[in-house]
Length: 399
Ligand SMILES: C[S@@+](CC[C@H](N)C(=O)[O-])C[C@H]1O[C@@H](n2cnc3c(N)ncnc32)[C@H](O)[C@@H]1O
Image (cartoon, rainbow, N blue to C red; front, side):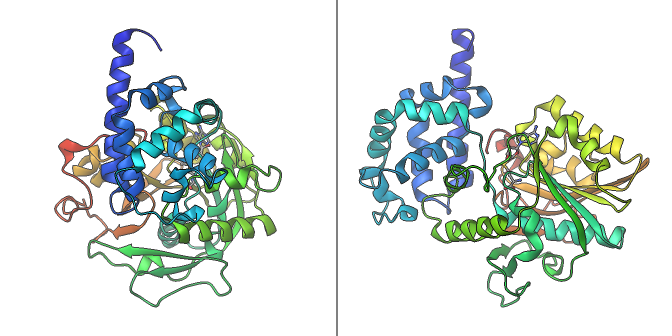
């Protein structure tokens, strides 16, 4: 890192990033990470450890995953007592920050190694609710079978989306018999929820692409690293992830090593036939810089010269708004929003484009708020507490 001023600026950015992560992503979800986000923001040694890693690696989710990964192998350490996923039973209390600091200091080299060399590799399959919603919308526009290509697919677990069962909180409705896992979400905002369940088009081709694919079959370390991104209190989510990994182990779909910015058009062209290709991205855009995002959407436009291409995104609206997607709602209050995701579709065929935001969602789709009308601008969302008022937003490395 360059000058002292640049270091100071980055330290301040990281402090804000951790505070925002604690406030917006951990609240109501992980009391431990909510507290530890503050701990990191106030701890010079931990922030300096992050400064020693590449800028794109300085993410709260990656730091907590690296610690979680190491804690799992040390169940006797005091810190492990705060992790229900590792059998811990201690409620979060004032001693948790010092246990965390001591653990990080004691395993500094291992942490540095993980933070430098391992990718942020979540595979949050609750995002398949967004995939269902979008695929149903695409099938209304282009009836018939589709191909699915997930870019930034991690281990490819979302490619199995129509094998999972789905339930809306408080409702008995579920889909898919013999499903290895059941995904549950809460519907908020008062919009119609029928697009979340119900029939799907036939998916006749599935594949994934990732800069750093998670090879569950070939790499014994891959599964445990993916599990490290499960948060300490999420015992049920851990079981869900394991169920999905088990299914993917039995019936794998290919996830090839590729770069969203350079290879997407080629991957689309390689799909046999002329059926529409649904390019699904979930939490990919924050890994690309402005130029990378432009290159990615250029790839979609190039591919759409020869066949129908639907970009189905589950991404921060503030980042989608800075691509070529022209959904009217993205020029309104959503333009600056980075803490929650917009689920939407950009249907491209030749020079024809139809862009739409279908729902807002928590980044992990613990809740989803479908559009109230097809041209909803979501101006009601801040008043309903779905995201903070625009002046408090910051689209960034939330992971
Ligand atoms: C946060 S994970 C999301 C994984 C999955 N889509 C999900 O929703 O659970 C982001 C993924 O994007 C991948 N990625 C980052 N930059 C990429 C790029 N330029 N091209 C392809 N994949 C990329 C990462 O390796 C990682 O697997």
